[in-house]
Each structure stands twice: as C-alpha cells, then as structure tokens.
Image 1: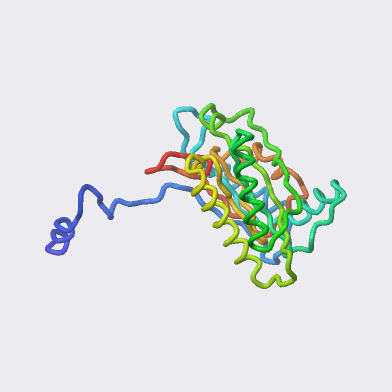
Image 2: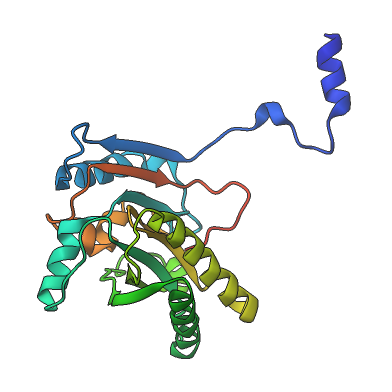
Length: 245
C-alpha cells in the first residue's frame, strides 16, 4: 500500500502509466522456406481485413485511421514491369525501390523531384524508372480523398559495384531527401513523404481502413506480387491526427 501511495504521489499531471495500452492491430505471415509467393501477400491482406475492429475511422465510415503492409520487394512483379517497358531490372538485391508520397500540385512536385535527383547523384545512385502507382480511390472517404497524395515508385541503382552496404546507403538517401525537402520547403512536411526506400522491403500504406488497402492498391491484387514475408498494420489513432504519411 505504501509503494502504491508513493507511485501516485510521484505522478506528473494527469498521465497514468498503468492505464497505457495499445489499440492498433498488427500481424505477420511468412513462408518458412523463404520462397516468395502470392499466397503470403493475399493471406496477409485477409488477416488485415479481419482486424478491422483493431482500427478506427473518422467521422466518415469510409475514412480510416490508416492501414498498411510491408513485404519483401516483389522481384517478379517488378521484373515484368521493366520487361513491358523494354528495360532491364538489375539482379535481386542490386537495386532499391522507394515509395513516395508527392504533393498533388505539379509545381511543388517538381521541386521535390529536383531535390531527389540532387541527393541521388550525391549518394552514388542513379534513377532507373519512375512509375505512377495505380490506385482506385473511388470508395475512400472525402477526408482521405482531399489529402490523398500522388503516389509514385522510384527505382534506384548504385553507380558503384559494391553492394555490401547498399541497404545502409538507401537509409541515408531517404533521410537526406526528406530533410532537404522539409528544410527548403517547410510547408511540405505533410504533403511529401517516403514510406519506404530499400533494396529488401517495400511498404504499401495509406489513410485507409483495413478493408480498403487491397482494393486501393492494384499492385497487391496481381498474382505476380510475391513475397515470403508480410507484416500488416491497422491503425487506431489515440493521440495524433491521422494523415497519409
């Protein structure tokens, strides 16, 4: 009793640590043989959809607090994308993909891309392909639609031959791009974001409900989108305002 009384006396303000809890939903699915397949991606999305009660929505039922999925880079899917464009995709592990949230306004988007090009050259990379990610936004709520970014994938290749520290270099590149964009354009803090930039994984996410992620991103419905690992997240915002980033 004495210890409990002392804990109450030591508290600062109205915060009660004992009552802290998580409300989000998180799940993981993997193939123990590490063989990429579409079943893992599709089943992980089904798991996410069944965690709808672990997420939240705003004043509109079709505007969610956020949902997303992290997978391995779907090499076969990207290989086919490059082949359709008569381009050659580097070997698995020798390239990286960034998932970019850009402003809808072309003028500010150009500013962001100029910074990306500068940082790309500075950190020893070159851009292989820029691709608009196909989405279906016909069913998302007005709040989500009003703040929806332009979503693009940018493929990077190292200009050097050493791939041992490739993942670390992509980490530094991602941070450098965001810091420079925000420093030169503070108003873009909520409009520009890099969800992921990696040679190993990629993140598809958005201001969506758990059931909206699959139909929103058309890539995730393609049978060639294959992975051996998937982590899903259904967000329940408790102390922050939900945003796409």
